[in-house]
Length: 85
Image 1 (tube, rainbow, N blue to C red):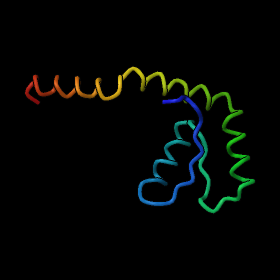
Image 2 (cartoon, one colour; image 1 turned 180 degrees about the vertical axis):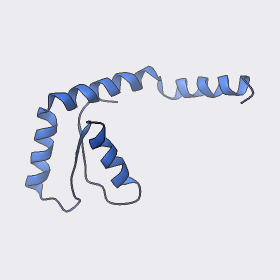
Image 3 (tube, rainbow, N blue to C red; image 1 turned 60 degrees about the vertical axis):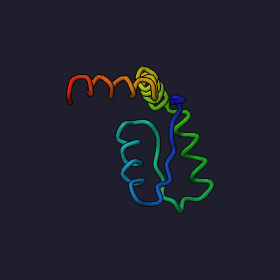
Protein backbone atom coordinates (compact mmCIF):
# COMPACT_ATOMS: atom_id res chain seq x y z
CA UNK A 1 0.00 0.00 0.00
CA UNK A 2 2.92 2.37 0.51
CA UNK A 3 4.14 1.97 -3.04
CA UNK A 4 7.72 1.14 -2.13
CA UNK A 5 9.95 -1.74 -3.31
CA UNK A 6 10.10 -4.94 -1.28
CA UNK A 7 13.14 -7.02 -0.33
CA UNK A 8 12.11 -10.49 0.83
CA UNK A 9 14.02 -13.00 2.95
CA UNK A 10 11.63 -15.99 2.78
CA UNK A 11 11.88 -18.37 5.73
CA UNK A 12 9.27 -21.03 5.03
CA UNK A 13 5.66 -22.00 4.36
CA UNK A 14 4.29 -19.77 1.58
CA UNK A 15 7.03 -17.16 1.89
CA UNK A 16 9.27 -18.55 -0.92
CA UNK A 17 6.31 -18.56 -3.31
CA UNK A 18 5.38 -15.00 -2.33
CA UNK A 19 8.99 -13.85 -2.67
CA UNK A 20 9.23 -15.42 -6.12
CA UNK A 21 6.03 -13.61 -7.14
CA UNK A 22 7.40 -10.26 -5.91
CA UNK A 23 10.37 -10.74 -8.25
CA UNK A 24 8.20 -11.98 -11.16
CA UNK A 25 5.97 -8.91 -10.87
CA UNK A 26 8.97 -6.59 -10.69
CA UNK A 27 8.05 -5.30 -7.22
CA UNK A 28 11.36 -5.97 -5.50
CA UNK A 29 14.10 -8.46 -4.76
CA UNK A 30 14.39 -11.76 -2.92
CA UNK A 31 17.42 -13.03 -1.05
CA UNK A 32 18.35 -16.17 0.82
CA UNK A 33 17.51 -15.96 4.54
CA UNK A 34 21.20 -16.48 5.29
CA UNK A 35 22.27 -13.43 3.26
CA UNK A 36 24.83 -11.20 4.88
CA UNK A 37 23.99 -7.68 6.05
CA UNK A 38 26.12 -6.39 3.16
CA UNK A 39 24.08 -8.40 0.64
CA UNK A 40 20.84 -7.21 2.22
CA UNK A 41 21.95 -3.58 2.09
CA UNK A 42 22.96 -3.94 -1.56
CA UNK A 43 19.58 -5.47 -2.48
CA UNK A 44 17.74 -2.67 -0.68
CA UNK A 45 19.83 -0.02 -2.43
CA UNK A 46 19.29 -1.68 -5.83
CA UNK A 47 15.54 -2.00 -5.34
CA UNK A 48 15.20 1.62 -4.25
CA UNK A 49 17.29 2.85 -7.18
CA UNK A 50 15.44 0.78 -9.81
CA UNK A 51 12.95 3.10 -11.50
CA UNK A 52 10.97 0.23 -13.04
CA UNK A 53 10.45 -1.36 -9.62
CA UNK A 54 9.43 1.99 -8.10
CA UNK A 55 6.95 2.58 -10.91
CA UNK A 56 5.40 -0.90 -10.54
CA UNK A 57 5.09 -0.63 -6.76
CA UNK A 58 3.44 2.78 -7.07
CA UNK A 59 1.01 1.43 -9.69
CA UNK A 60 0.12 -1.50 -7.43
CA UNK A 61 -0.43 0.83 -4.47
CA UNK A 62 -2.77 2.96 -6.56
CA UNK A 63 -4.73 -0.12 -7.63
CA UNK A 64 -4.98 -1.37 -4.04
CA UNK A 65 -6.22 2.01 -2.79
CA UNK A 66 -8.98 1.74 -5.38
CA UNK A 67 -10.31 -1.36 -3.59
CA UNK A 68 -11.02 0.82 -0.54
CA UNK A 69 -9.89 -1.67 2.10
CA UNK A 70 -12.38 -3.34 4.42
CA UNK A 71 -15.25 -1.09 3.33
CA UNK A 72 -14.77 -2.09 -0.30
CA UNK A 73 -14.54 -5.78 0.65
CA UNK A 74 -17.76 -5.58 2.70
CA UNK A 75 -19.58 -3.92 -0.19
CA UNK A 76 -18.36 -6.61 -2.61
CA UNK A 77 -19.58 -9.34 -0.25
CA UNK A 78 -22.94 -7.63 0.12
CA UNK A 79 -23.30 -7.50 -3.67
CA UNK A 80 -22.57 -11.24 -3.85
CA UNK A 81 -25.16 -12.00 -1.18
CA UNK A 82 -27.73 -9.79 -2.89
CA UNK A 83 -27.03 -11.57 -6.19
CA UNK A 84 -27.63 -14.95 -4.53
CA UNK A 85 -24.07 -16.18 -5.00
